Length: 246
View 1 (tube, rainbow, N blue to C red):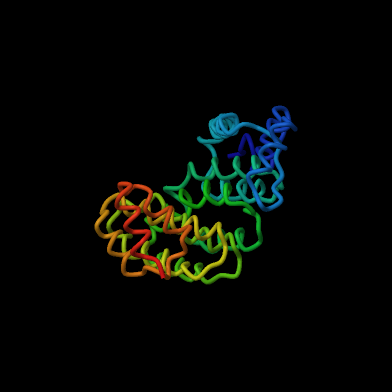
View 2: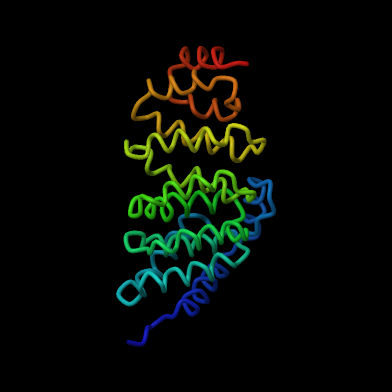
């Protein structure tokens, strides 16, 4: 059956809608939140999500996961953050049927800097990579190797891909291993992400998180530690900051 919209045609439509809502002033303000050079149309996040929902509605009865993956890759190759967002938001609608082979393809996208900022990585990877880790448990061992990858975005993905899995006890040990693997980093984006993941996994077992923090003490970057302890009471936070000093 001939499709109403090919991935290429939907990409053209999506970019046209973003251009129609472009706001140079908003774009200039958004750039201030990134150390890297990130391009913007200047479209508000609710509008990007609305456009993504509209686009998905036009193809939901026709597209396969392969169509969505092709569309996503086209949009990821665009420089603007909002275009990358459209690619991610449409593709993750197919997360329950994504093929296992996509795992290495995503790693390639990240290594090629198609997702070249923390916001794009954080929108896409918890949903798409997280879904693959649930469907294909053997990928958990493979994503651990991402923690040693030279590319910043591959390393950040190794962390944030577990954010939505932090409540699942089956992933708890891996999450602590992944966070610990990054303690030696000098990069602030990785330190913050590691602390964020620890905070999330700690929600289900604060005592376990406390034991982990005390056991690793001085090895934990202070930025990561401060993120990790945010949900403790003020007195406990002060105690943990004191007891984990080198």
